[in-house]
Amino acid sequence: MTTPMNTKAQTLILSFLILLAFYVGLGSFPLFDLDEGAFSAATMEMRIRGDWITPWLYGEPRFDKPILIYWCQLVTTAIFGTNEWSLRLPSALAATGWMVVLYDFAKRYFPGSEWLAVTVASCSLMTLVIARAATADALLNLFLTLTCLSVWRYLDQPSAKRATMTYLWMGIGFLAKGPVAMVIPFFTLMLFALSSGRWRDTGRALVFLPGWLVFFLIAAPWYFLVYNAQGQAFVDGFFLGHNLSRFTDTMEGHGGSLLYYLPVLLYIALPFTGVLLAVLYKWQHWWKKPVGRFLLIWFVVTFAVFSLSDTQLPHYLLYGMPPLWLLMANYLRLVHNRLMLVIPLLVFAVLLMVLPFVLESMVATAQDYARLVMLGAIDAFSSTYFVIVQFVLGICVLFLVGGNVLRPYGPLLIGTLSAFCILTTVVPVLAEAQQKPVKQAALFAREAGKEVVTAAVNMPSFSVYLGSVTEKRPPKTGEWVFTRTDKLERFEIERLVFQQGTVSLFEAK
Image (tube, rainbow, N blue to C red; front, top):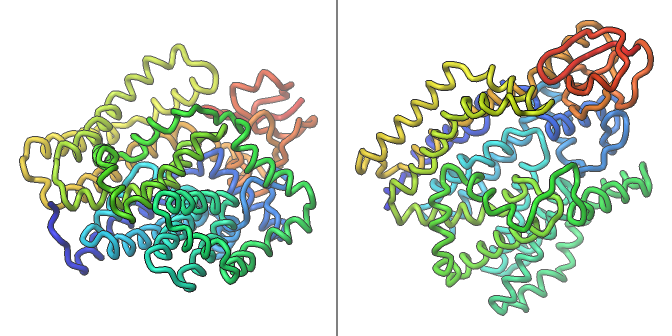
């Protein structure tokens, strides 16, 4: 059982943890393609065009996501300039708000576990990724969590105010990522009503007209304006293409299976995978309590919705992790097991230690682009990498043999250690291998004062670093062309002007 922490200590420690997890080094690495580059390039094109309604990418309307993330990035880049830090700041701020929401809910419904809820949530692997990514997901996570927790607060103590707040958060979530902000809360509410017989309160919530008015006042204006600007192309691209088709067709090669999210669940919860498994094993204990039942249904709905989708990405499951984090925090408040805490991080550190050698053995048989990325990663493994991983391994072993050394703040120590390890080893290697060449190519072209077209590659972060709109089309004679190194054989080349790792610039013949 963990020892209670006074409010002042909680504030100081959790502030440090959030600073480490979400803000330290936020702008230290290049934007990652595809997603970070696409959102950031679209924001840049909107600013260049002076268009705050329609997102643009490669000179064409981009209907992938609604407007909220672009508005946020337009504000932060207007204040701080266009750079990695300002483009990622909205996500870091949203993730911070996310932790505040979980803390407040845990304090009310799982008293004594609030600091553990923030620890588990902020240091989980996928949270670290999304909180530092210049994408729409951190914003959706915040407002989807606010919506679902507001649904429970309404069920716990029905009132017009709580119903209105639910529609308020759902409206903002609809601006963040569209229909998914409604789908998950709706099915969670309906299944909870089915399991508990709370149909009267559910019916009142669903036909609460003031709430729907609030929802439409928030969400509808932008959808009306973008439809007015782009017409049926917006409906086809956004609602039919990037929402309905994500569930009925595999998009951008992100296919999977009904079992896809089972292994995903284990690694996105690192380093608290052991705690997660313990909570799921005891699911019947939580099911007997109304709040526990609601939280389990929320997770199951998310898991089922995206397991049935034909387009599957690991971070989709993050939309259903907040309820598990709350249950995991309450479990940690009551149960102490150092093996459950240490073993997942120890295994992860061992995998990081052998990763350079595994890549070296695979590079000879890898093909084209994958081989170039592996070579870049191998070059990025420095002595610092091995020192940090060995340090983490040593601390894990110390915890294993140190008896009660993890009491009373073992989760905090393990979470901080994991975040430090990921941010100082994994992220730098990925950035060096995949994105540094893209940034260097763009800066080279920018210094030369050249306009560039993009061909046979989808790395929109290039446009951000170039600082201008880059058209995606076949090149004309004399134009500079940005492409992947393994695609050069497709083109007639007058001269190669830049080549580094995975990418190249050439003048078209």
